[in-house]
Image (cartoon, rainbow, N blue to C red; front, side, top):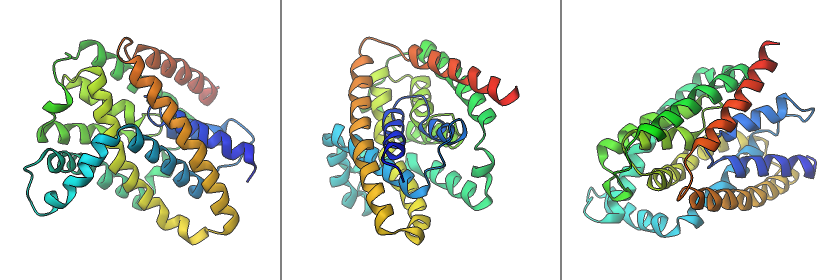
Length: 267
């Protein structure tokens, strides 16, 4: 696989994974609107590993707290901040894990990979994000995260399985709808991405292992590194901007890109 192709895939994945603009949608478009072939599952998994490393590093204190709380959670003791965070993250991941596995088994995930679907999802869920961001109160913080809210945000997250929706975007939408302040909504969405990426990566790795070879492993390692740094940059910029800027610029981008894609799809 050409180095330039690996670089493009990794940068697109890294920059868009945590911005509310849909990483999967952009990656599908790369192969559909350019002469470049589909990068394959192995590179997809590697790019996701890179973004996983970035979000864990960026939110290291919270990630470490949740990790240390896992043993207590597994024994049924949700009596520490770490165990509580680990429990809520686990609960919020169950809906998308079940839905993702269902789509994979039925083959519906492939049926959704079209320019028209991506275009409509970009526009519709962009508008929903704008509506929730403008109307949602900014009263709750991450400390207010409850079991009820974790379940609701987990259900919102299942919509991200539609290409063009954006996992971070739809999860942030759900959090803003529930009244979480922008920065806290984004942080919860990013933390929820950790078990979700791990689950999706594990699911895809089953297929990747069958086709792995030395050359592919080398390409995957390069993709992971590029994706890591791109994701870290995107996370840093977004979390800083949210202190003074709403999600409107991302919504405008989504609508413009979605309109262009629908023009291409129906022309």
